[in-house]
Length: 219
Image (cartoon, rainbow, N blue to C red):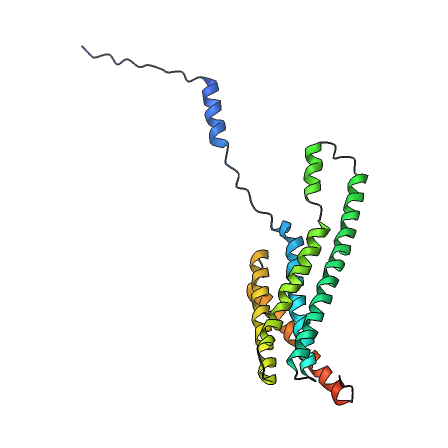
C-alpha cells in the first residue's frame, strides 16, 4: 500500500506580501552634500586671503625696492592691512546686500510659495551680507599677516625681500590648495594659477617702483 503524502498549502496574507515588497523597494536615501552652499563664504574667504597676501606682499616689495629700512616696510604693510581689510569688508557687504535685495524682491513677486516651510527653505538660501563682509575682512587680514611676519624679524635687506617672496609663495600654494579641496576642483591648476598671479603682482610692483625711483621720485 502506497504511503499517502499530505500536502499543506499555506496562504500568505496579501497585506503581508505588499508590506514586504514595500520594505524591499524602499532604499535608504544617501544625502549628498551640496557643495554649491559653500560658494558664498568660500569665495569671500579665498578671495580675501589671496588679496590680502598678494596686496600686502606686493606693497612691501614695492617699498623694499626703494627703502631698506625694515620699520618703513612694516608700517607700510600694516597700513595696507587696515585699509585693505576695511575695503574688502565694505565692498563685500555692498555687493552681497545688493544681491540680497534682488532675491528678496524676486521672492515677493512670486506667488507660488505659500506654505511656511517652503518659505523657510527659501530664506535659508538667501545670502548673508554680514557674514560675507566679516569673512572677507578676516581672510584679508590672515593673508596680509604672512608677509608682515616674514619681514618683521629679518634685519638684512636682501634676505628680507627673499624671505617675503618665499613666504608669500608658500602661502599662495596653501590657500590655493585649500580652496581647491573645499570646492572639489583641480588642486594643481588652482595652486599654479594663484602662484603665477601672485609672483607677477610682486614682480611688477617691485619693477615699477624701482623705475619710478630711478627717475627721481624717491620717498
